[in-house]
Length: 493
Image (tube, rainbow, N blue to C red; front, side, top):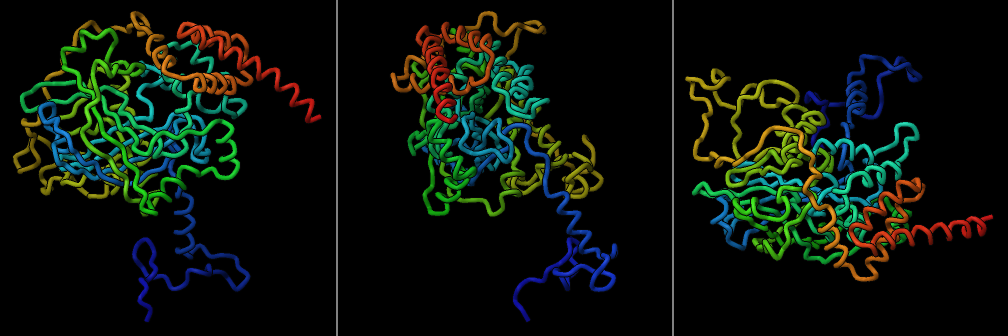
């Protein structure tokens, strides 16, 4: 007798032969009564689920966050109290690339965290940049369309990207970061992570504070040039997966320093910028980052599909002591992220083990796809609605968030009025040394290949408003590239 487990069908019946189909004679044909064959083929047809509309290509691992600082006066969240140690899953990703895209492409990187806290799951959905391309969620689908394939050519379109960006000055800050050295980190452990959005803390006294989250790499920043990335892609399309998985397997656990910026609630009315604008950062001189702990990745998943592809992150997952803010993009993502998972994975996607909380769950959601718990998670079949008289789960007023102060008339406000979209990109540009500026100009020129001249000039005029040297540098890099191309063609001939 073998000590190996017995192979079974999905219904648990033992399988006698997994090598040969049932046929009419040794030459066939195959019989439909071969239920094992039918089951295997049917499952194979359904092995793929829809890929994410954005952030499709990703890499992830498990780890912990240890809190060493003390911000208990700002938040009651148990996962953020001194000494707390919380298990987590971190998924990195590219934004535009499809599932088969190369890892080492210039793109914004997703940096999404799922904390399995004792109060429920807390998801922090961020990027490796502190800002984004747009500030109004009505423009998010349009922006993403520019990152995807042209409906006629079925190719990525540089014209679409730069046309949108040149008509959207609020994108300048993010475009400058993307086209700088930090737009192409060599592996996940060599980049920062940011919650990007403004969230809120609230404490047991009912006081609210605005907060931004930062995760600063302890491995240092390392980046590819465009030319280096091309050489990497020529050898492997999986360089990030290889680096992250291989490093953790070798015991080389990457770490990030966890920081927060905290703003008193009333300060939001006093700052020269809108602190809820996703295209803006909070100056560190005004709100210094506070170091509160360390995040470490120390365990690879056992099954990529089950634990990374099916991992579902949404900013709708918060816990007592952490809340949202008037950030328009965050408000929309509270709905859109969870809704995307319901579409991809099923109505009860949070019953999938990687998404399931590490504490008991009690709710009244009925039936639907992925209902793996049968009835209602109440422990009482008669308590399938609320309120009820049969001991079903009841609300807990002690976790009530303090009220969010709002004002103003409901209208479609022009988000560009009263907004300075050039000051913060200018401050960033002025931080670059000559080498960084030269690479920035070169990267932009390379990304503008094939773009119509009128769109290039429209974008360069935006760069001029950031800094005259910015626009001039990009124009010079484009001109130099045009001079080099004929020579290259001649040499090829």
